[in-house]
Image (cartoon, rainbow, N blue to C red; front, side, top):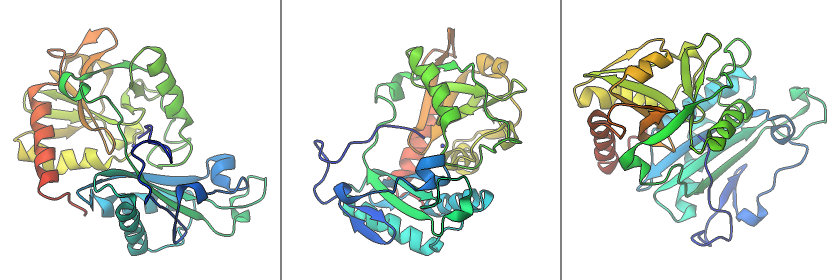
Length: 306
C-alpha cells in the first residue's frame, strides 16, 4: 500500500539512460504515452504494485506479483504476460534506470476502449513498469517518529470495494491524505465503519505492548501488505516478539507503548503522536528500532525476492 513524489524526467538526478517498460519495450520517459481512451485513465480501471529494489535485488518480487495477479483476478482483468515475464520486465527496468536502489511502479490498466464503462470493450490491457527514486517521509522522522492524525473519512467497506484489491482508484486514501496534509502531518489513520482501526492512507499499522505486537486483520478493510507480512512472519520472531492479528480500536493505539507503520515505500517508521496524544515516549521506540534494524540487516544480506 503507497503514495509519494518521484523525480520527473529531466530533473536533476534523473539518469539519461532511464527507460520505462511499456508492453514489452523499454522507451525513453519522453516517449512513454498512455491513450486518453485507456480505461485506467478514464475510470481508474486497473491494478498496480509498488516495489523496491535494494542493490539491484527486488524485495519480495514474487509476493508482489502474486498480489498483482490476485488484484487483477478480482476485477476480471487478464494480465497479458506470465509472472516470469513480468519479473523480467521489472528487472530490466531496474537495470535500465541506473539506480540499484530504487522504487518501482508496475501498472496494469484495462487498456484502450470506448467512452462507456464496459470493461470488455477494451481488447488488451496495458502494462507499464517505472523505476525511479522515492522519499516518502523525511529522514529525520525515521529517528524521531512521525505525528499522524485520525481521518474523519472512513475506509471503504469490504462489501463495497475490497481494499485488498490494489486498484488504480485511490480516492478514498487520497481524501484522507488531504486531511493529514491540512492538519500539518503526512499520514492519517483510517477507521472502518464499525470504528475499528483499519490502516493508514498508504501504510499498515502495528501497536506494541511489552513483547507483543498487535495489528488489524485483513477483514478490517486493509491492503494485504507485503512488508506487513514480512514483519509478522520473519522480523518479529527474529527479535523475540509475537504478533497478534486482531480487531483494534483507537484506544488500543493510545494505550500502546509504541506504534509503527509499514509499507514498501515507508519501510518501517515509528509514530510519535496520534493527534494531540503522545504515544509512548513520543519517539520511535526501542522495539520498533529493533524491528527496523533487523529489516536493514536482512536487506544488507541480500533482499529476499520470494
